[in-house]
Amino acid sequence: MKIVDEVRNADTIAISGHIRPDGDCVGSVLGLYLYLRKTLPEAEIDVYLEKPADIFNCISHIEEIKSEINLNKIYDVFIALDCSDDRLGDVRPLFENARRTINIDHHISNPGCGDVRIIEPKRSSTAELLYDLMDADQVDEEVAAALYIGIIHDTGVLRYSNTSPRTLQIVAELIKFGFDFSSIIEKTFYEKTYVQTQIMGRAILESVRFMHDRCIVSMVSRRMMEFYQVTPKDLDGIVNQLQAVKGVECAIFMYETGTLEYKVSMRSNGRVDVASVAMKFGGGGHVRAAGCTMNGTYHDNINNLSIEIAEQLDIK
Ligand code: 5GP
Ligand code: MN
Image (cartoon, helix red, strand yellow):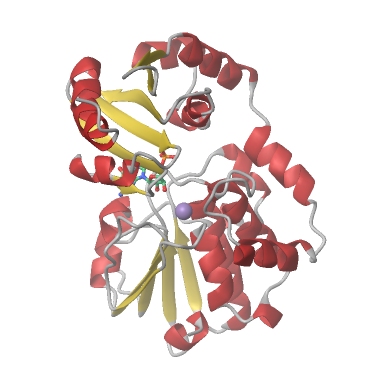
């Protein structure tokens, strides 16, 4: 199946992804936008997304993301990427009102939504899946660079176990376009501002291991974020650093989003299925990387997560 066949007759198309967009979400949304604009020049195509982190400003035409939403507009096709409709945020009504809806995702926790559902949990990233839904000869350098960013971010620069031979074949095709992939990796994945590095250091310093040192947890409060003058986008990567501690099988990172409300990120080495833990609390994700929003005190949340994790690790 090719994506163009699903949207060929549409005059108006909208594309969006999940709230708090990560690299795969931003790369997929922009990559598909640029691709459809090129293949269907007559169609009116709008792209909606919560403002991505500044590191993604290197993606071509990112400034064309629409921030104003006309809720009365009825699109011929709405394509939701890298999530189900429940994580579309403010544009969800546009998805619901569209004449035809398409959902393309790789999250195991997503049962799929809309008229056409392409959910492939074995795919490293939505960007990888999208590439195989495109005609390779219509992909250009801008599309390639956007999809590359998606794949790089969801595979931790091609090192997580979700990286398959197909992932690497696609990456090989993409880098043939000649964009500066090395700089993309450095600027979007590894480079941190000084305050981002400081708050990461603080979170690591204050982390605590538990369950016979097989789990690790840390938290950043709103006060800490104010002190370092950072926003949630600056906290990316902390949970991965916690998971890198030798012996740790499951890492939990939380930041305070409101009174008694925390955004939780979890990572695992595969022994714990963190997607199923997150789903118990209304979230989702992948076996080794998942998240949810939890209400309650920090310690209550750790306790509640621990019960689920302990069961999976067979700790009484
Ligand atoms: P992160 O911890 O990096 O925010 O997210 C890890 C993975 O879990 C990503 O694939 C992300 O899309 C997913 N995820 C994070 N938070 C939520 C959530 O609240 N609900 C769902 N369904 N997925 C989430
Ligand atoms: Mn993804």
